[in-house]
Length: 258
Image 1 (cartoon, rainbow, N blue to C red):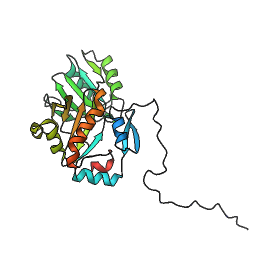
Image 2 (cartoon, helix red, strand yellow):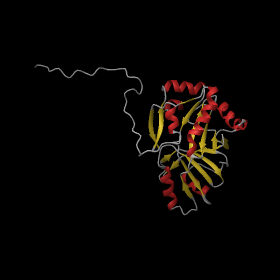
Image 3 (cartoon, rainbow, N blue to C red):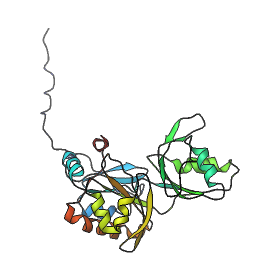
């Protein structure tokens, strides 16, 4: 039997990372962070979608960015960590309804890593819970519609509670020199901030909340902007303070969790 030659296989080309990949269209269906224009100026080459927002996914090279995090200091736009604010007379009671974690040991000024579960114990989200006041909390979210879940639970909870998404957008300052950058920005008291605690501060007159948290195993902080109209201003002030420490913007990725 005569064999008919098949099609010639395509030539394998060693394509550089991200070169020739599809372009993400910046349409109206997803939100831009208050730092979006700053990330473009800083050279962000790719974006992902997270919590219905654009998340910077690449600036230079993921390995180069990783080693810069390990050895220096980096700035991340993580506004995709949307906040669910719980407040009202029954704020504490309602927060305890959402998570199986014991919140009685969580002081005002402190945060806890928690899981938000459904009626069957399934995990909906694993946010950082921040206790701002006795009955006022933020849930700093991973990727899911936890705001809608919390609002739905509140409808039938019979509690005096308000559930909103505040105008709050975090940046992360991560790496061994992050303490130096934050000390220069807000003063030496930042050096006494304990792990998973927060403080109120101003950076160049911009009100922020600073937590001793982050997505990495390195020393780091999250800087929560309280006025979305001042995103580029805050970004530029942090980058200016970090210049002498060789700060550069990078993008989150799984390798940095190791």
